[in-house]
Image (cartoon, rainbow, N blue to C red; front, side, top):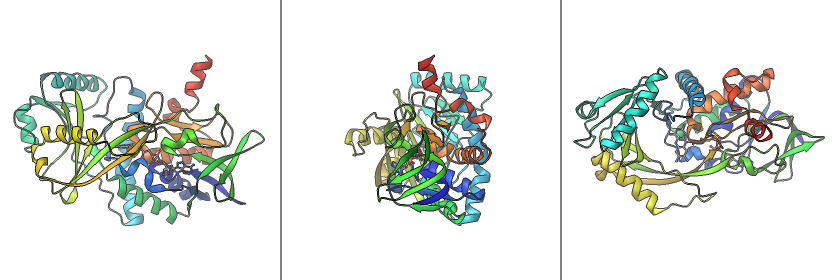
Length: 376
Ligand SMILES: Cc1cc2nc3c(=O)[nH]c(=O)nc-3n(C[C@H](O)[C@H](O)[C@H](O)COP(=O)(O)OP(=O)(O)OC[C@H]3O[C@@H](n4cnc5c(N)ncnc54)[C@H](O)[C@@H]3O)c2cc1C
């Protein structure tokens, strides 16, 4: 039996950030994960896109996402200084392009809603769109520019954050963790290699697996589910100046350009349980729609097809804060924004662990919010 101040279950996008920030505050931290490379981050496109990811019913999430975006430059500078890793943070903005008149109406309506919230979402004619991004298909009717939606490379970000956490003193254990409960409170974790780690605070950051962690009864279990996504990684892609999001006959697709002629095309959203196999129809539809908006992709080379499991929640917003059982903090359910929200989540959890107070920004995302609705 060993002991630590903070046990972090899951070394994905969120767990590594939590571990880094807690270790920086002088806490002893152990991160446990049997297979960090299976995290959703390895399939993620890395869009930092509170504005082009705007959904009508998600205005509280928008505030958290905008705060997360604002912290990114400083976090990137810090990570690069500590690790020397280029995390691929690029600030070229995002273009949303419509394929037909109905797609344009949908985009323009959302942009008007966003402008009403004070967001910069600039409507563009087809000609303006093409001038900003010559690689787009000729004849598109128009779109919207979101100049502050940026991108990062999630694989490099994960590598850098894990390295920064270890440099700050955190330890990584390769094992599957279950929650250890004594006298009605969480007091650490039991590992499948027979070890027990007692901890002052246990943080559940197991992404799509969070609801299936052993040791918790149903009342304390976070309400997450896996939401499968495919991305297609291309090489030998010609010049793209922006992240491009296409709306093609009601379907959505994005193309995220990376350095060295690479690009990521994504993503599907599938309720398929824990299945991570590659579905040909998904890949076909993504590439078809991407090439419709950016025809030159037909000349690119296929690098890799990835699938990952986003941690979905009942309202598509994260579960952040003290669990309904003492000793446990939950930081999961980041769904399609976990790369964007990882750094701010690390800060929020580190604040909570060290002060006992959940920062106000996180208050709407308390993990117990669904249960109190049920109980009235
Ligand atoms: C196709 C796709 C595209 C995406 N694009 C974007 C994007 O553009 N922008 C954005 O912001 N987000 C994006 N996301 C979402 C983002 O990747 C996720 O929200 C984020 O990775 C969630 O982080 P996490 O740490 O909660 O989970 P993960 O990164 O999945 O990590 C969870 C970890 O928990 C570990 N674990 C599970 N069970 C246990 C256990 N019992 N003990 C110990 N460890 C355990 C797993 O092995 C895993 O390593 C995308 C996701 C997908 C799938």
